Length: 304
Image (cartoon, rainbow, N blue to C red; front, side, top):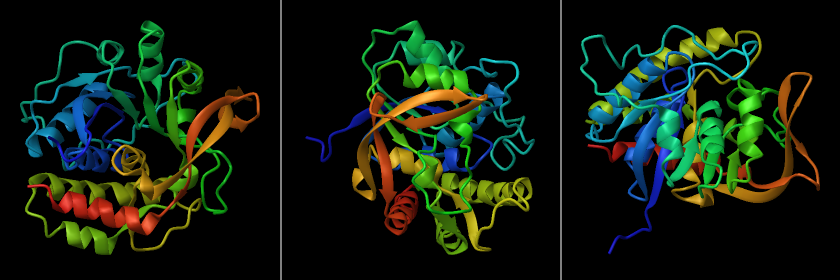
């Protein structure tokens, strides 16, 4: 008998830009509570993103997990996905022979009843739900903002749900039982240089590659938000996406609160408006950031 109930999941991700997607994937591989059935990629060069995911899976000893490339563009032409040019550096090279599935990510999501963990724009998810609207599935996602942060440095607009607002409205209005881990709480969870130093002691090729990717990403992040955000000099990455994944591993790191929200687009901007007439979601409203960071580092240090 297994020690823990095991949840089967599909990971839908824009892996390769912010390093937290890669950290989330590694956490998933380090967590016996979860059974990863497949990875699907979204946004921009989805084939490169798929190769990045496959390389990390291979380094983690799980090359058997299929990876599917999905939707490269948002639903409306006037919206844009991030592509910053560093994607794949320190992880994948042209000489890597990596097997990506020939079928489409939307087909893979639509055909599977496993819980979907979405840590990127919801373009693939919305298309899959529309393709098979009667299929039962759960959705856990990192995205959105619900106005509960008292941190003046926190962004007012969240990228994952805002970058394809039309897809976000479609996916969140489809009636799926959904848990939202918003930017309000993920903004509080940060890896620091002392954590990176601990991870550098790992003998895992996957963990060492993650450390390389963090060191490549963080200067890009600082330049991208220069003059707009203030962080401690010791921060090396945010753990937005890993925190969303943790809800399925150990929900005690966050406080989940039922909240009625209306997914909507106002003046072209996606938002989650609180309303008694809204859809009820489970929303992470508080986080024990220190405990989760320690958990993340300890789990990664267990990787071979």
